[in-house]
Image: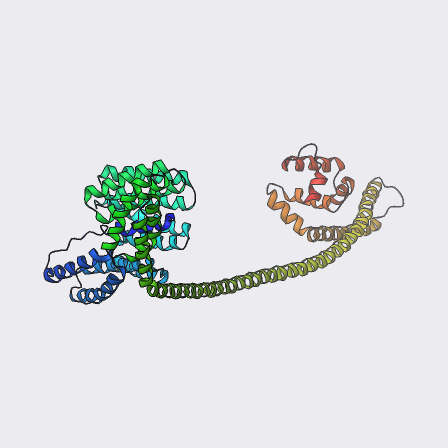
Length: 546
């Protein structure tokens, strides 16, 4: 017997006392009392005759639905409906109808949520784990075990008596790791489950935990350890008067004795178990057990009894032959339905995945084109300002060329005026000399010639004013900037700076201003001081840098 099948067998035992059977007393006392009696009657027969109780649970479901409508404010009938759905799901698990089992368990969980007690669904999640264990989906089963364990811990913290169920779940973790061949982890959880059940004084749960642990040890060849656990489990079941558990413990104990070669001790235990199966009409389990029982009879040289039991075995086999074939067909049909539903679910998942992927692709495409559009817009703006700025630069360069040409023209005019002015300055010097000669009554100098020279000097002054005006026009921006930077400069200072700006030498500045060279040098020194220029920086360089 495999670990998962053996454990499933004891799931049935546990559920026989898993659900508390206390009815509530209120305005619906008569309905609840009558319904509770009917529920208990079916529940007592549940572990003996699945087929019979499955029909009864199906019938009682319609009753509980009508009572829920009659008493909408009471949660009792909702809780009982969830319990019934769990029982029906367990029948479907036994019949390998896993799709139907999951549907009932899902509905049961929904009911717990509906009346505001989601943690009451711990047993439903527990059974969902069993569904996936039966299909060898161990890791998937563990996710449901974890949910059941978390809910059970919450219930215990709230003061609910769910400690025995916690011990069962710890034992379940041991079975999980045993199925994965992780024996060290399996033993850890089995021992933890047994110790926890013993600390609670829960002999029934402790017995079932020992039976499961013993099954794992027996499969690993640790027969003596398995025997001790099964003996203690048998004592526990007898102490609490649990007949079904006691008989199953007897069967397991006989298996241990038989494996150890003690066929003499195994025989009476197996005889008691076979009698119990006959009495309770458990034909399916009896059919499976007969072969081991007959072998033990032969090893104990009980040949006549072995022959009789062999005849009983053949008779029983013939009687259930048609039923077995029908069950095989039913199991095959259930498997096909399950596979079909799984295929449909897979197609549905693939279809939904494709829709999601298509939607994500569409969103990604939209985001891509939005980004591209934004980038193109930004690039367009950059290109617009780039070409506009480039055009401005071209226009500015053209204006600079025109301005430079104009400045060059003006500079030429100034230079011409300067040349003429210098000549006229020399003319003034000549006038002065002539006046001196006239005063000395020298010959050849007449007043008329001096008057002519004076008229020419007057014209020279007019030209000098024109030069100054042209210089101011040419250096307009420079003069404006110089005054803003150095408002302390006088008009004369600014004029000298302008003359330096257009490239005149100190002598040319002196001649133009009709002053001495020393006076120009003094003015330059004074201007440099006002500008706070260091000795390393010349006045000409600074002026030309503006």
